[in-house]
Image (cartoon, rainbow, N blue to C red):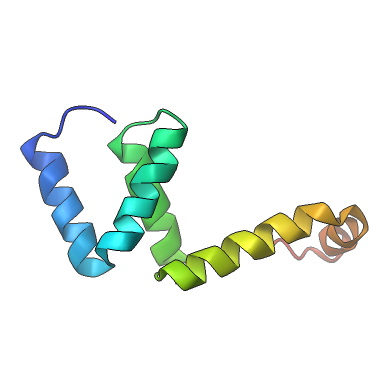
Length: 86
């Protein structure tokens, strides 16, 4: 993840205050699983905020929806034909 310098520590505090410790920890865990640094975790957090997915429950539901969309290739193809990329 990299060195915890004052800038990263301040950024983590900001995200914990904006979202929750659990959501920030989940983003950090996802980043570490890919052997990425803090900016990757922060990118995950920004994506979740932009998509208004800001609770653990909403994140899990969004990830399940995403995974299910790839498990059914016919459905995925039909959605792509319609231009539905959500």
